[in-house]
Image 1 (tube, rainbow, N blue to C red):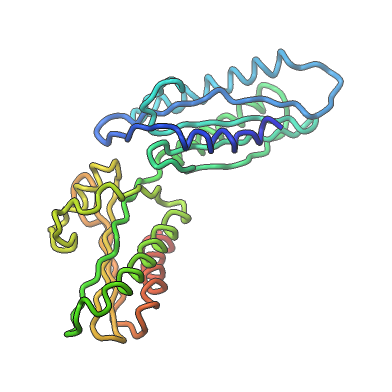
Image 2: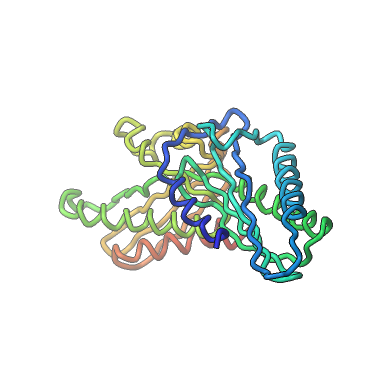
Length: 285
């Protein structure tokens, strides 16, 4: 069915060249015309009515999003869109229709919203109600703060040789960073920005020692927030975890967390870090 071909469209879009969003200007959003499929098997031909309602739906959706000064609409054929909205509507029976809607972060090459809605009725009023609801959902997805989660750093306060455990430390830190990014991304509260191009941007200096420079780096990546985490090894079996969440535009610390002293081997860093950010940034809001 045409409705489910959206998945293929999204995958193909993620492979296309893209241009990064610019934080200082209105964010460019492209909205494709939604497809329409009628599988209700009703005898009455309603093609003309459906085409008219779908056109009104798309016009209202573009009007709602374009009215917000944070965004500017661009043609789907134009390069430079930070987000792309695609969708389709399927009539499954006389009174039931489905609306499949996805929002794609073009720069990050990932879906930030992918939902299937059900709405009842097939008249002007029911289509209008569906559009109002869908536009609110799309706007909420577009407004999700972009977060740059930088690689967790290790501050080793023991007297042990740094080279003795460098490889294993790097592996455990990578697990910590990956798990924290996944937890925050899956929470729906943040849109995770790729920081790969910014590695080494502090000229070899640890980000924890650069006086909040990670916020400026995050801003250049198009992020609204930055998160920097640190594992402090107190002894081979004791450690603490901490993080700072900053506003990427002002550098202001918006939230911080500190686990206090914990007992456990290096492989327990991941569990402690996920628990800490979940408590302070996900479950507390």
